[in-house]
Length: 151
Length: 241
Image 1 (spheres, rainbow over the protein chains, first blue to last red):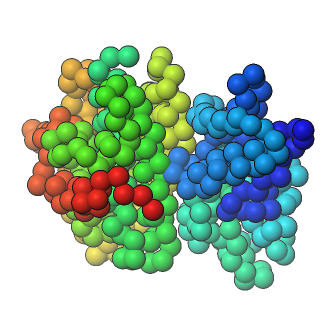
Image 2 (cartoon, each protein chain N blue to C red):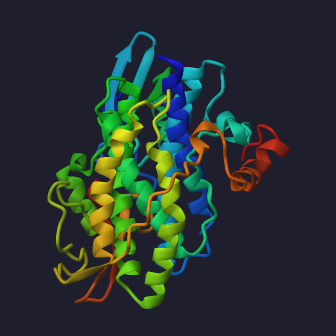
């Protein structure tokens, strides 16, 4: 049977399909016991609507791979942080047009445009298309873009 | 776990739920597109927090009620939100100033709860605190822009502050369920005062009035919020889609 982590690494985030739920740090733990397999996940934002789709996807994919009993458990502590996003995933975000978050304690003074790389950008709004993003605009190439908020 | 823990979870959950519902009413009516989206985002965070708190309250209560049952099948006097969050949205200055006062309160309260001994409470508080910090950045920023903006924006922000100030006393009114509520007023003021000063807004005079929302004694406005929010589940109990 394929390793559960490998299967989970193949599940994309429903709102940002270029990164997996493992790379985002949503999957916290996988435990296998006689009774079946249990996957612990943590929500990014409290109200993130994607979490229910992610739960269903985890159960569906693992069952498909032959795991008979699958349980998904939600854990809240420690609270999810963008610091958990894997380095490779940060590059994927950037290539997808989303400026990756800086470290939480070093909230960036300027956010680099993910398209042209210019540092001269401005924040349009603290809030963007999804709970995890803010809305920015590049002052060089004039393109609007999303910034993954450090949390 | 004691009944006061359940009561605390209800108060936290109802505050988030009712304010989330109020903010949701700005959808499609925001003063600009970005603010429309901001209100929706913050409302979403709050509803998510409400879900966590009310689900915990339901478990502590032990009568088999989940978060949906608590949100949709309780009547006005059973809601434990502070009166401030149920007041109508008013203009955008009122909406922002209310949120600023509330966000500052959430930050100090959640920080205290996050350091508490009860693991479930601490976990929800720690998670919500991060979101409250972000909400505060938004509401504090706009309070500054309104207060220190044009004559008209200043007038509206000051009027909102005058109207809301009296309702903040409830947040710090200690009772048997929360005997240390008054200890939060100092740290709360330490955030609010410098901001209002920078925004050139005058702090209103404290009054003797203490609203009673968190004890279940609400203004006439909560009923309208509940009527809208609960309508579907009351008309079609258990409806799903």
